Length: 190
Image 1: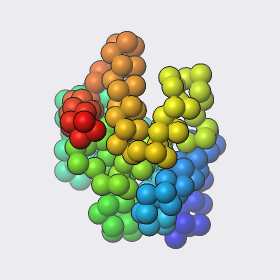
Image 2 (image 1 turned 60 degrees about the vertical axis):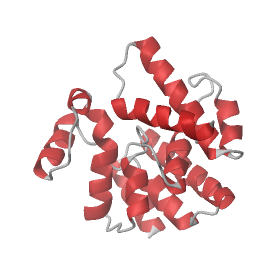
Image 3 (image 1 turned 45 degrees about the vertical axis):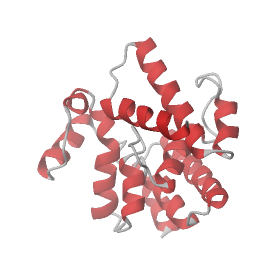
Protein backbone atom coordinates (compact mmCIF):
# COMPACT_ATOMS: atom_id res chain seq x y z
CA UNK A 1 0.00 0.00 0.00
CA UNK A 2 2.86 2.42 0.79
CA UNK A 3 4.36 2.09 -2.72
CA UNK A 4 0.93 2.54 -4.33
CA UNK A 5 0.19 5.67 -2.27
CA UNK A 6 3.66 7.10 -2.94
CA UNK A 7 3.13 6.74 -6.70
CA UNK A 8 -0.36 8.25 -6.45
CA UNK A 9 0.98 11.30 -4.54
CA UNK A 10 3.84 11.75 -7.00
CA UNK A 11 1.27 11.92 -9.83
CA UNK A 12 -1.09 14.41 -8.18
CA UNK A 13 1.38 16.72 -6.42
CA UNK A 14 3.91 19.15 -7.86
CA UNK A 15 7.56 18.19 -7.16
CA UNK A 16 7.96 20.58 -4.20
CA UNK A 17 4.77 19.35 -2.48
CA UNK A 18 5.74 15.72 -3.17
CA UNK A 19 9.16 16.26 -1.52
CA UNK A 20 7.37 17.76 1.50
CA UNK A 21 5.02 14.74 1.57
CA UNK A 22 7.98 12.33 1.58
CA UNK A 23 9.57 14.37 4.38
CA UNK A 24 6.39 14.15 6.46
CA UNK A 25 6.13 10.39 5.82
CA UNK A 26 9.77 9.92 6.90
CA UNK A 27 9.43 12.10 10.01
CA UNK A 28 6.09 10.55 11.00
CA UNK A 29 7.67 7.07 10.73
CA UNK A 30 10.61 8.14 12.92
CA UNK A 31 8.27 9.63 15.54
CA UNK A 32 6.08 6.50 15.38
CA UNK A 33 9.13 4.39 16.26
CA UNK A 34 9.89 6.66 19.21
CA UNK A 35 6.32 6.73 20.55
CA UNK A 36 5.31 3.11 19.82
CA UNK A 37 2.70 3.83 17.15
CA UNK A 38 2.31 1.49 14.14
CA UNK A 39 4.88 2.73 11.63
CA UNK A 40 2.73 1.85 8.62
CA UNK A 41 -0.14 3.95 9.99
CA UNK A 42 2.21 6.92 10.39
CA UNK A 43 3.54 6.44 6.85
CA UNK A 44 0.05 6.26 5.33
CA UNK A 45 -1.13 9.35 7.23
CA UNK A 46 2.09 11.18 6.31
CA UNK A 47 1.74 10.32 2.63
CA UNK A 48 -1.93 11.34 2.47
CA UNK A 49 -1.95 14.37 4.79
CA UNK A 50 -1.78 16.82 1.83
CA UNK A 51 -3.59 14.68 -0.77
CA UNK A 52 -6.19 17.47 -1.22
CA UNK A 53 -3.69 20.35 -1.13
CA UNK A 54 -3.35 20.43 -4.93
CA UNK A 55 -7.09 21.04 -5.43
CA UNK A 56 -8.36 24.52 -6.22
CA UNK A 57 -10.30 26.41 -3.52
CA UNK A 58 -13.43 26.07 -5.70
CA UNK A 59 -12.99 22.30 -5.98
CA UNK A 60 -12.40 21.96 -2.22
CA UNK A 61 -15.55 23.94 -1.40
CA UNK A 62 -17.51 21.99 -4.00
CA UNK A 63 -16.39 18.63 -2.56
CA UNK A 64 -17.36 19.81 0.93
CA UNK A 65 -20.82 20.89 -0.20
CA UNK A 66 -21.49 17.75 -2.29
CA UNK A 67 -20.33 15.42 0.48
CA UNK A 68 -21.80 17.24 3.49
CA UNK A 69 -18.40 18.07 4.98
CA UNK A 70 -19.03 20.84 7.53
CA UNK A 71 -17.48 24.23 6.73
CA UNK A 72 -16.97 27.01 9.27
CA UNK A 73 -17.11 30.67 8.25
CA UNK A 74 -13.34 30.97 8.70
CA UNK A 75 -12.83 27.93 6.43
CA UNK A 76 -15.20 29.37 3.83
CA UNK A 77 -13.09 32.55 3.74
CA UNK A 78 -9.84 30.50 3.78
CA UNK A 79 -10.59 27.27 1.84
CA UNK A 80 -6.96 26.09 2.11
CA UNK A 81 -7.81 25.27 5.76
CA UNK A 82 -10.20 22.60 4.44
CA UNK A 83 -7.52 20.47 2.78
CA UNK A 84 -7.30 18.28 5.89
CA UNK A 85 -11.03 17.56 6.00
CA UNK A 86 -11.18 16.99 2.24
CA UNK A 87 -7.99 14.91 2.49
CA UNK A 88 -9.73 12.67 5.01
CA UNK A 89 -12.64 12.27 2.57
CA UNK A 90 -10.28 11.43 -0.32
CA UNK A 91 -8.23 9.03 1.83
CA UNK A 92 -11.42 7.14 2.60
CA UNK A 93 -13.06 7.24 -0.83
CA UNK A 94 -10.14 7.30 -3.29
CA UNK A 95 -7.42 5.49 -1.36
CA UNK A 96 -9.57 3.03 0.67
CA UNK A 97 -8.19 4.01 4.10
CA UNK A 98 -10.53 2.70 6.80
CA UNK A 99 -8.54 3.25 10.00
CA UNK A 100 -10.26 6.10 11.91
CA UNK A 101 -6.99 7.12 13.59
CA UNK A 102 -5.26 7.61 10.21
CA UNK A 103 -8.31 9.48 8.89
CA UNK A 104 -8.35 11.76 11.95
CA UNK A 105 -4.61 12.41 11.61
CA UNK A 106 -5.18 13.58 8.04
CA UNK A 107 -8.25 15.64 8.94
CA UNK A 108 -6.67 17.41 11.92
CA UNK A 109 -3.10 18.03 10.77
CA UNK A 110 -3.78 21.71 9.98
CA UNK A 111 -5.42 23.08 13.14
CA UNK A 112 -5.12 20.20 15.58
CA UNK A 113 -7.92 19.46 18.00
CA UNK A 114 -8.29 18.89 21.74
CA UNK A 115 -7.61 15.30 22.80
CA UNK A 116 -5.60 14.24 19.75
CA UNK A 117 -4.38 10.64 19.54
CA UNK A 118 -0.64 9.98 19.47
CA UNK A 119 -0.80 9.39 15.70
CA UNK A 120 -2.65 12.70 15.17
CA UNK A 121 0.03 14.54 17.17
CA UNK A 122 2.78 12.79 15.20
CA UNK A 123 1.39 13.85 11.81
CA UNK A 124 0.67 17.40 13.01
CA UNK A 125 4.25 17.72 14.29
CA UNK A 126 5.88 15.90 11.35
CA UNK A 127 4.20 18.35 8.95
CA UNK A 128 5.91 21.21 10.79
CA UNK A 129 9.39 19.75 11.40
CA UNK A 130 10.05 17.56 8.34
CA UNK A 131 13.62 17.85 6.98
CA UNK A 132 12.63 20.09 4.04
CA UNK A 133 11.38 22.87 6.31
CA UNK A 134 13.71 25.86 6.30
CA UNK A 135 15.14 27.09 9.57
CA UNK A 136 15.08 30.69 8.34
CA UNK A 137 11.31 30.55 7.83
CA UNK A 138 10.32 28.89 11.11
CA UNK A 139 11.24 30.42 14.44
CA UNK A 140 13.08 28.02 16.78
CA UNK A 141 12.78 25.04 14.39
CA UNK A 142 15.81 23.18 15.80
CA UNK A 143 14.33 23.47 19.31
CA UNK A 144 10.95 22.16 18.12
CA UNK A 145 12.61 19.26 16.27
CA UNK A 146 14.51 18.25 19.41
CA UNK A 147 11.39 18.64 21.56
CA UNK A 148 9.38 16.39 19.21
CA UNK A 149 11.57 13.44 20.18
CA UNK A 150 11.40 14.29 23.89
CA UNK A 151 7.77 15.26 24.58
CA UNK A 152 5.01 15.28 21.93
CA UNK A 153 2.66 17.52 23.91
CA UNK A 154 5.32 20.16 24.55
CA UNK A 155 6.31 20.11 20.86
CA UNK A 156 2.65 20.39 19.85
CA UNK A 157 2.14 23.34 22.19
CA UNK A 158 5.26 25.10 20.87
CA UNK A 159 4.04 24.68 17.27
CA UNK A 160 0.57 25.97 18.13
CA UNK A 161 2.10 28.95 19.95
CA UNK A 162 4.38 29.71 16.97
CA UNK A 163 1.42 29.42 14.58
CA UNK A 164 -0.83 31.73 16.59
CA UNK A 165 1.92 34.33 16.96
CA UNK A 166 2.80 34.13 13.24
CA UNK A 167 -0.85 34.64 12.24
CA UNK A 168 -1.35 37.53 14.69
CA UNK A 169 1.83 39.30 13.60
CA UNK A 170 1.11 38.73 9.90
CA UNK A 171 -2.53 39.74 10.14
CA UNK A 172 -3.72 36.27 9.10
CA UNK A 173 -7.09 34.94 10.15
CA UNK A 174 -6.91 32.45 13.00
CA UNK A 175 -9.03 29.32 12.77
CA UNK A 176 -10.83 29.10 16.16
CA UNK A 177 -9.92 25.39 16.37
CA UNK A 178 -6.22 26.29 16.51
CA UNK A 179 -6.86 28.53 19.53
CA UNK A 180 -9.11 25.93 21.21
CA UNK A 181 -6.42 23.29 20.65
CA UNK A 182 -3.73 25.60 22.03
CA UNK A 183 -5.79 26.37 25.17
CA UNK A 184 -6.44 22.63 25.69
CA UNK A 185 -2.75 21.70 25.47
CA UNK A 186 -1.68 24.60 27.71
CA UNK A 187 -3.74 22.89 30.44
CA UNK A 188 -2.51 19.38 29.49
CA UNK A 189 1.18 20.33 29.59
CA UNK A 190 0.84 22.03 32.98
